[in-house]
Image (tube, rainbow, N blue to C red):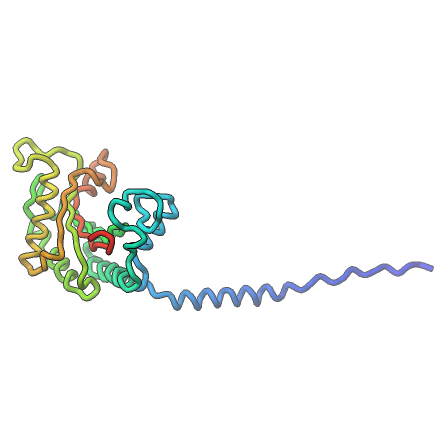
Length: 240
């Protein structure tokens, strides 16, 4: 008598995977809708990016040794939740205020462990080797900057105006002994103009760094052009 062949058990259905995938997608969409960019702290995001890239000089929220330990941005000085929200709102306000200038390369917006940086291209605001403001080219931007200082998004914040140059020495007949004096004078003159408009000088400090903090290599003309700048920094709490 011939034996009956045993039937293989039916394979389990995978129809549930489609339903499960749909559910995960809907949950993702739900949390994306809940996300509010205004509550993002631009400084913390920059620090997170630096930490992921293992950059000890840029990660202000890490406990790794680096230049930030000298700047005071340690765990005990981390921004509060309320300050973080304010800094995120300040960045959004800066983007909306300076969109035309960013598109024309007169202004650059970035952030790092210091805070939010509004970089003014020196070639637009100053003549070569001079610290005198080119008012015809810079007045509109500086007036926008003054209005930005008075916006509620940055109320009570401290600011630092930093002058930077490329590595080309000042000319022999210059009134400035070196790029140190030139960078400092440019920062001071920006503050003087804003002070004439009505900013509170007690909220500001100035610094001149000459060519010691380049953004790009000074080996090319384009890099030197980007390095010649005045940075207006909205200071994070650990950098007053």
